[in-house]
Length: 436
Image (cartoon, rainbow, N blue to C red; front, side, top):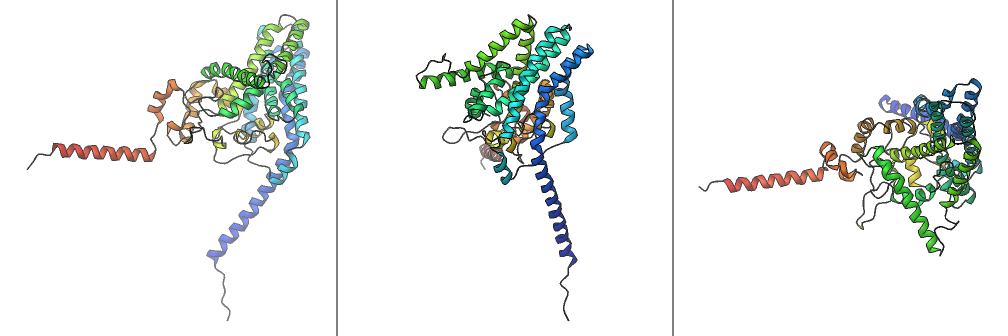
């Protein structure tokens, strides 16, 4: 008589495994469909440039200047709410999809369109602010909204500026960065920040215990000095003057100066405060991004004294869908720094990397309130370093305070310390013993 081989204790896990595999296959198919459909959702990157256009028109039609503030509300209120409403995007493109899309010009045209929309919105906002009667409060709202527009334009400039072998993209990057007079960015960022990121030598990497208001005083002048030095050295190696037109800092600067003079001539003296505030607040958006992207993270030195290669765990990552689509995956910063020339549409999510508790818009707000920022982020930095603050990029002025508050010596050091204490105690006991 045949003996049954059925054993429910063995069969049930097999059924569970099959069910889990089926669910995983469904999730994988769902993720794959979402990754493919994102090609259309990237047009949301035009939302920030088009928003000031729409609400400037609404302000004129209703004669309500408060609409000029709407872009500020969009960035700091509506986008954070959208991030937490639509959740996190963990879907990664597969190898086949990466090969299909990494060189597709469609994704570049989105950035070209965004740059054109950026300039159109910039000039339109300047026109509306200057040609209609508004209170100074509402002119401020228009200027800050334009500053946010400038910050998002710099994001497109950042992405295109990395494609150094594509002169069209580099040219469009200069055009995008010229809006707020930050044309030196793509030189400083590519050749400086990516080389020195997550080290004390980098003015664009924030340190634990350093407020954003202290950071900006180091970041902005330090970034410009580094950019000018890098470009001057490049030209000198070619036997050219640093003041020649081939200086890639001067090229976008001339665009900025020309555009600002024309707007001042056509739109009047109100452009002086408007353009200054819009440019400065655009710079501030970049400062906020730099501040949150590498806060406290440190690359260690190898035995040869050189810093280890930048890896995904040297950047703070954020994967919230809404802000990531608008910012063209800038928040997948871990993969960006590990692979700087990888196009935005194929940037990947990583597990086990430092992760921000929200998207950039809310983190910018948090950064502007230093006690809240430190309360949220300092414990995360400590956890990242497993309590060893020797492995953290710390503000020198705060080192003593932070070590006292957070530092936990590594287990090996604790063991050595305990052994030394035991040996010292034994020696003391031997010295104090009385002879028989």
